[in-house]
Image (cartoon, rainbow, N blue to C red):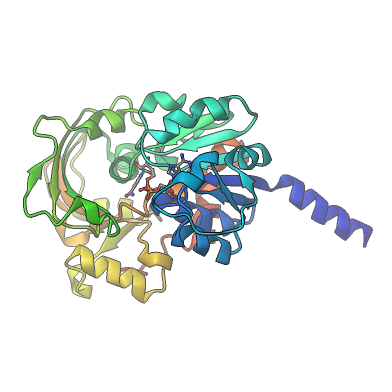
Length: 356
Ligand code: NAD
């Protein structure tokens, strides 16, 4: 009996207590993912607009906190019971995930720096917001023991996750990617309707090249951005110059070994991003989330040392397992491989054939 109580106390002490500041597209997914981890506990979530999403957070059992300015927010001002201020949430947490809109995280940085609480920023912030940028497959160890990191954007996460194993196995001499970007998330009605195909930006390389170099510094990379009127996913068209000339089978084998990469195929009728999202809904993925890079098997072509392929990235979802791993790296709780495995198992990432 005494031993059981002792073990329970020990378990609670070893849990990482996580606060989520900003409960929108990314924050609510991070909260659910943290809640699913065996070694983490959600202290609460903080949100400026006290709207239907805040009410849903309370219904899910999360304690709701808010900044002092919450009452003035025109986006939502429901009468929802608050557990306290954002400052209280930060003070009660070991690690805070800042998922506020791009730029607000940088404004919050000084607030975090005044506390002992570590912080995970998002890709909308400049890389200078934290000492490291983070992708669990590329550079987990650099963040171990730091007080802050920044999970790179959805597009950069998708690229880093793909290029890291290819580089390890075959050597990547250079990479050229055209990123066909969704115009907005499904709830961002203010971004549309649009009827155009927009070079975004018209200059090259797009910012994704230098962002990728924050996690893979020596990568020779060219990126071009194009925005299209779609909300479901991004699509990357890649040409990778390798240091050897592997077979298509070898490339497929390399990617198949990665739980955060799913090889999808026309044989299953998965010809579009809409098909991929529908597969996720059909498999009862919460919010229809696709955490994995979806690489079309049939698109993988090798011509000597030149590899081409197409991959789809669910912009709302691929950074979620990365946020969980970033929390463990800051807390120095596990090595990269163990953390990725715990995260994957807890979420159900990369069940081979789940989407294919
Ligand atoms: P969002 O607008 O959907 O959500 C932001 C949340 O922050 C909302 O709940 C809002 O109420 C809250 N908020 C606003 N100001 C606040 C404040 N001062 N204090 C506390 N809460 C505040 O934004 P998002 O799309 O989730 O983006 C968050 C971050 O994640 C950004 O850096 C973005 O670039 C990055 N990101 C977004 C996506 C995506 O596809 N949406 C993908 C990858 C990374």
